[in-house]
Amino acid sequence: MMFYLLRRIIPILLAFALISTCTTVSTSLSEGAFTVRKVAVLKFEVSGGEEWEEDFTGAFMHHLMSNTKWQIIERQHLNKIFQEQKFSASGAVDQETAQKIGKILGVDTIILGYGSASNYTNKKGDLIPELVERFSIRVINVANGAIVIKARKTPGIDWTPGNVAKLILGLGLIWSKDDLYRTSNVYDNVAKKMAKDVGKGLMKMDKVAR
Image (cartoon, rainbow, N blue to C red):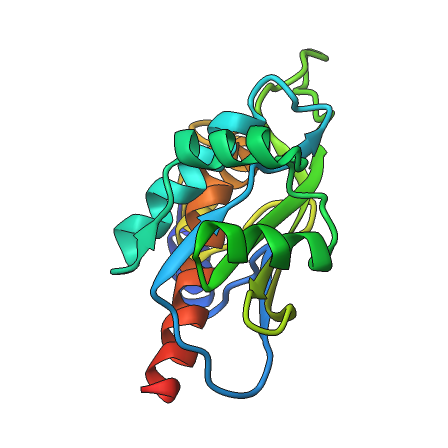
């Protein structure tokens, strides 16, 4: 009887999974055109995740480079400039300071990011490390200091068709909610999703400008 019900229910649930998506990352763009050539990403600031925030920044830069054609300023060069000019290297700087940094670096785009690490524990009570709870990204137009893109990551599981299918097909035995939570929030996957959205937004604005 149970097998019969599963045969009837699973195809319906899978069909629903394929047409529904609920993600924890959202992005908004300002109106207008914006030419992009050189981009600088300031070190992300993650409260409670200080030991891996540098790697999180590097992951974002890697995925941004994979999705776009622009020149991304190397971290070593950024750090040298920050030391010489005595600027803060974190993503929590204000827009005016970010604009000044961008002009010194000779870039047209500055990307800032800040947020907090997750304290999520599994069923055994063990802390799952390297997870992002909340995170915000601001993309600054260096020419006028305006925010052209905002991206925001909120807590929770990305209920993408793939994750829903995993939970259904695995019946909670192969892939648990803990597994899906980790996959949705581990910093490398968050960096990949946010870099993809930010890159798409910049490409759209750059295309209009050209």
